[in-house]
Amino acid sequence: MRKSHCVACGINSLSWTEYMFDNTYLWAFVIVGISGVGVLVTCLTFLVGLPPHRLTWNVETTSPLLSEGSDSLDVSYRGQKLEAPCVVEVSLRNVGRKSISSSMFNEDRPMRFNFHVPILALTASSDSDYRIETAGNEVLIHPRTIRPGQNAKFTVLVNGNPDVTLKSPLVDVQTSISNREYGVDRNSIYGRSALLLLAVTTIATIAVSILVWVAR
Image (cartoon, rainbow, N blue to C red; front, side, top):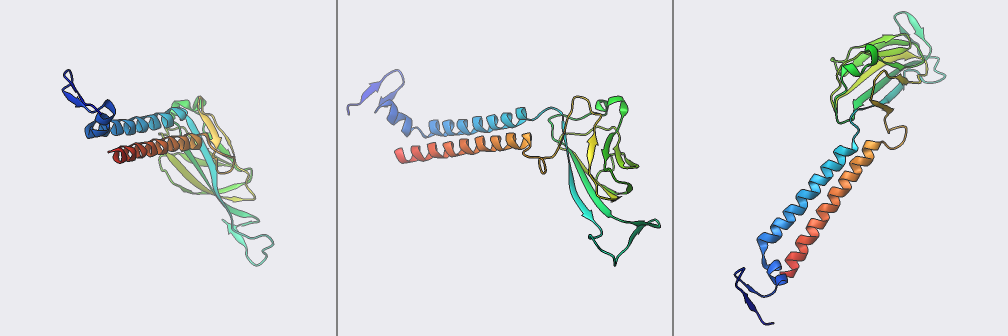
């Protein structure tokens, strides 16, 4: 192949293709650029996919203290014999992009978790900032600011087979049960999509790097 001299660019041009493959710095810049754009798009995909205000909750564990048909053991609480004692743990988490402020609790009303069986005691709470109390069959969580990613758990002792429901006073906040029992969560889909995009970008970057190395 005949080589020509490029006066304007000062390159003894083998050809533009050969120059491209021989320019290590140029390819390093291209590879870093592809990686950076991929990471940026991945982050934006994940963040845009998250709703601004969303709270999820879930019944983590339901642990009966007596097995069915057990006549050899009695359980009592403060002198009251319990027919079907059960320990229940419930969790809630802010999975949105923004904080859920205390002003979003309509008329300062609490969130009400109804267990539909008598609650005997609140036995544990993972976050002392939450003001939690019991009233009959319900656990009340009073207004407070819940930061993004913040979660809390509480445990109660009940007498009976619980069926937990939530009555939420939150305004402009999506509230739903976690995907552990009711199908795939939207945030899980966005998270997987973002990870898939990042994986594809990484594979493409590696492929380009290998092609450059082989071509040289």
